[in-house]
Length: 187
Image (cartoon, rainbow, N blue to C red; front, side, top):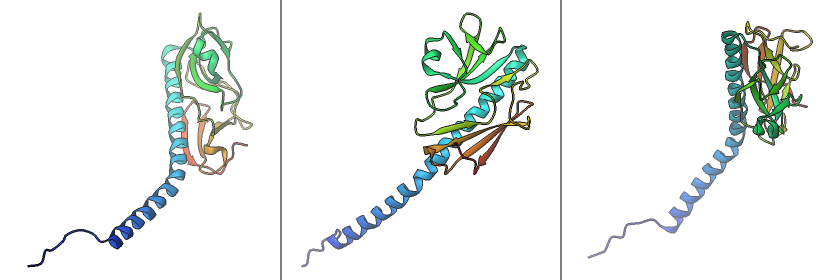
């Protein structure tokens, strides 16, 4: 009587491991671009939500609402800060009610409505308008948007390599439009 042995031969096991390794390397190679694209898209969609919120807040409460990059250290201590011109590293995008209409956050009079997470240090954000978006009591933007005066544009460049860039435009009426892929650069 023969004993029948069940199992895999060493050759079968080596072929299986090799196939799994090849599939895993392809998946990892393709996922880096996908992760960059997702990071850019998520940031701009979150910014779009915050722009819509700021616009609605300004119109519903008859207050001036400002969206701008602010120094992280100043926002954390919640005192005074002035909007920065750089929308990238060392800043955090902040929405606040500007009670005295001077464009500077004063913790005694103004209120921080929201802050966004800090931008990844290897990414860049370019904004084609002034250093801030200022919504008046009707929900319209009253800051300079660009040379034509119609739109302000945000471009998010993951890994600062100008690949997988995504864009978002904001109209004078305060409406944000997610554009998706763009050839614009953050340089």
